[in-house]
Image (cartoon, rainbow, N blue to C red; front, side):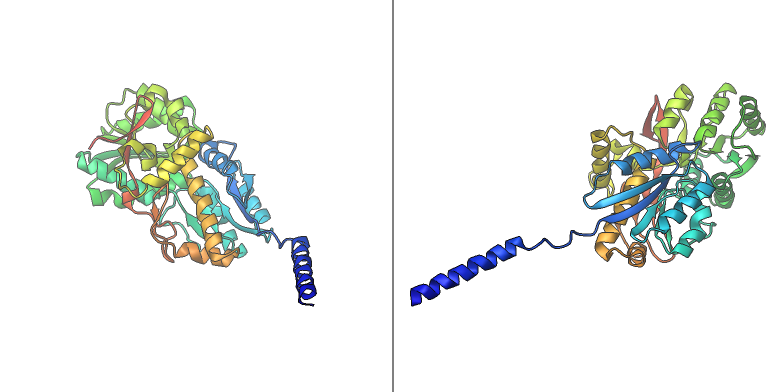
Amino acid sequence: MAKRAAMRGALWLALLLMGCSAMPPGPPPQKLRFGAIFSQTGRYAFVGKPGAEVVKVLGLPGVEFVIHDSEGQTSKAEDSLRRLAADPSLLGVIGPCTTDETLAVIRQANDYKLPCLSISAADRSHPTSPWVFRLPITTYHMVYQIGDYLARHDLKRIALISVESGFGKAGRRELLTQAPDFGLTLISDQVSPDRQLKPEETDQLVRASLQSRPQALVIWWSAAGAVELTLAARRQGISIPLLHSGGIAGPEFLQAGGEAANGVLFPGSPLLVPQSLAENHAQKPAIEQFSRFCDQHALPLSNFGGYGWDAANLLVEAARAAGPNRAKIRAYLENLQGWPAVSGVYHFSPVDHNGLTHESFLMIQIEQGRWRPAPE
């Protein structure tokens, strides 16, 4: 009898195991879905395309990015955000890429209660939003780096050429604000209402700036305009330091500027000069990882690609740590401290949605088509 009981027990166990193996598997883990708004085409593609290319091949398991092309137009950025926000499974958005687009979608992000990680340069005078984080070097930090460099080299009489766009106005406003802190005097202030200039117009702007005999020329422009004004400055035989904003921190400026770009100075990320990083530099591991990624996928190394990388990884980390909930992701990001990334070490707070300090940047000089730390 004991033998028969043991056999029955073994049979029941076998049937139980068979039943377990035949049970359908549990539901697969929820895929994390995010949106992205990049200016992949149009005049500002040099800003948006690198980030889009990074996100397209990122290949994070269980993660999907829905990418829209805004073409650098505010109306298309607004429409893209509206459509992305309407998808309840979508947890956050990377972008937009330009200042004007970001300003246009700030109110929308508030209405939709959707976390947005903009990769446009922030301006401390711009309206803020609890739902929008702006990851790149800010206008404030760019001007601080430029002002500090000029003061250390005893270059006090400055000429400025800027464009009447959101980006250009922010740079001009910040330079006027910080100039007294560094003992700088703006002796020429040329503002162009036209974003697309003819060669004779660029020459005219540069000539007008140089008439007052400045000790340095600062150009606050992006896209093709930055290249055109640099070429015009060389045609005018400029012999004083030529400085730009961080809006030229990509290989497109190097290629389009050619020899005219040699000697140009601008504030940027140490990503562009990894050979200068000390072994204990806080950003070194992230920069090395991103550099290997770019080599693996044959992508150019640029600040703009780095912003896309940082934004994607920030959103994914927040969703995995806080859960797939828009409000929880926003709250997690807002309290994230000491997060080392390609573009800097982020210290977010309820009053600071950029979270970067001066230590994340340095002045860079172009030499023979390459980036180098600017001479001290």
